[in-house]
Amino acid sequence: MSTIALNLETDMVVLPPPVISPTAALLRALKSRRSSRAFLPDTLSVETLSALLWAAFGINRRDSGGRTAPSAHNWQEIEVFAVLPEGAYRYEPATHRLLLVKTDDLRGATGTQDFVATAPLNLVYVADFARMHEARADERSFLAGADAGCIAQNVYLYCAIAGLATVVRGMIDRRRLAAALGLAKTERITLAQTVGYPAAA
Image (cartoon, rainbow, N blue to C red; front, side, top):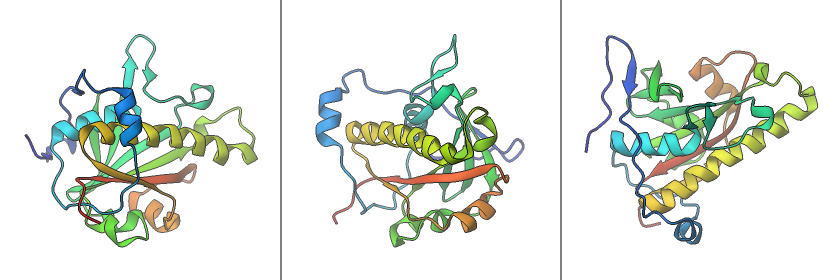
C-alpha cells in the first residue's frame, strides 16, 4: 500500500484508478453504516483515498460527466476538499487527482471536536453558489446541503464496506476554515466528514 506522495513540482497527487471490490454488497453496507467518533491516527493508503474520493463524488459516466452522487439541476456545485496531515487538497474528479491548496496541517480547523485534529482524513464539502444560476438566494443553502448530504452518504457506504470509521459533522467554525482554505466569496462550507480506521470508543 502506498502513502500519499506530494509532487513538489506540480503540487498535485495523481490518484490510482479507484478499485472497489465487486463483492461489496449494498445490503451489507446499509446494515454496517454507522457514525463513529473514535479514530486511529494511522494513515490511509493512496489506494484507499482514491476509491473513497471516487465513491464520494467521482465521475461514473465518462460520456456525460455524470457523478456518483446527484446534484440539483446538475450544477455539481460541491467541491470536495481532502484535509490530510500533509496538507489540504481539492479533489478534481475530471482527472481523478488532488490539487494542493495549503501545505499546512489544517485538520484541527475542520471542526470543533477534538478527534478531527488527529484523524487521518477530514473531507470538507464546499458549495460554490456561483454555479447555482437558477436558484433563489434563500434556496441555495438548502439545495447545497442536500447535495452534500448525498455525497456524505456515499462516503458512509464506502466506509462500511471498507472497514473504515466515519462521521459527518456540522460543528465547524466556517469563517476560520474558509480563510484557512482560501475560499472565494461565493464558496460556502456545508459539511465536513472525518474518516479513518476505527478505534475503541
